[in-house]
Image (cartoon, rainbow, N blue to C red):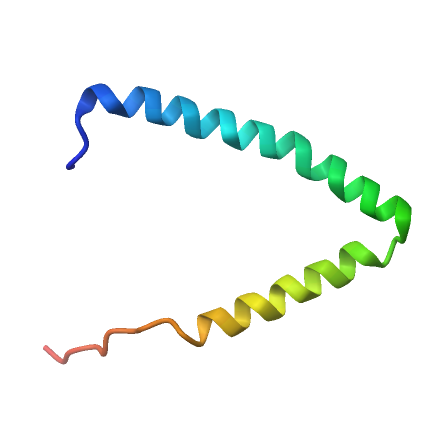
Amino acid sequence: KTADPKDIAPSMAVGFTINHVVAVFLPLLGGWIWLQDWTLPFYGGAFLCVLSLAFTQFMKVKPETSA
């Protein structure tokens, strides 16, 4: 609760706007990639999964403490 209340509404408006722009643009890009070669979106998804798995290996996890 460190944000100034008057800054919350404008920040959320910008966030929603960016979200909606991306939500329109990415399916168009995906459709265009699909038209080039239908296997490319699947290879791209597999690549993102492997990349995500690699990045999770660097996450620091706090050890649990016994009560």
